[in-house]
Picture 1 (cartoon, rainbow, N blue to C red):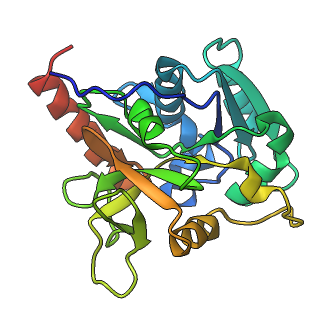
Picture 2 (picture 1 turned 120 degrees about the vertical axis):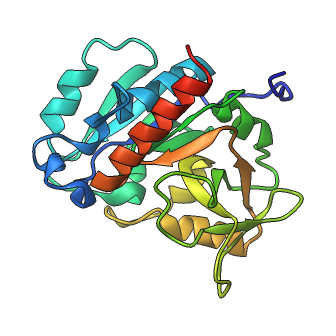
Picture 3 (picture 1 turned 135 degrees about the horizontal axis):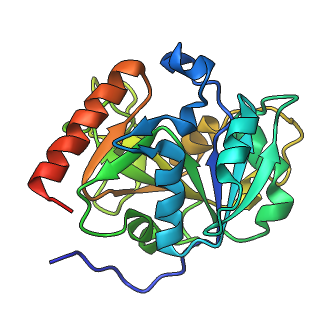
Length: 250
């Protein structure tokens, strides 16, 4: 039986990060932007956008920089979710700066963020709904979707966060490992960026500050997480997806 979650308000908007150069995936990404790399027959970008469409997200803001024309051409004509392009051709703004640029489009409500170098397989329930069901703006500023470090594909680091029984996250710190890694999807309050004056800045420090203030929470995803950040990870993800099709044929 599929897990069920309480009725929740799903964020209407997602900020989808598609502007990066994908340097760890060269030489492939010299000619193809990383979000358009295909794994098991579908691009990483389409996998992310399809998940948002299924969860009922109305609008996806997609930023572009490296090989931007290819991404814009690929998305032309897509109707769900509605696509809004954010042009960073002249200057790559990093994830924090990318969010700041589009704050007028996001408005005042919490919004999804999404990296385009990962996806999951074998889930029995909608992981975006799982994360939205966790969200409580009274006690959190950021909520992250998490994947277990052990058993995930393409995880070549020692973990990101510890999670307590209430879902609150703390950084790995001095521990040799942490049980969970950030799975590339989160919900944030736009007010976090309202007073920022810089145009180019990273997003990770906002995670760390929220953790220090005990306002960072996380929801473990259902299924197996596949991180596709290197050339070697493409092959590993292809194999995992093939094994999943054998176990659970469509």
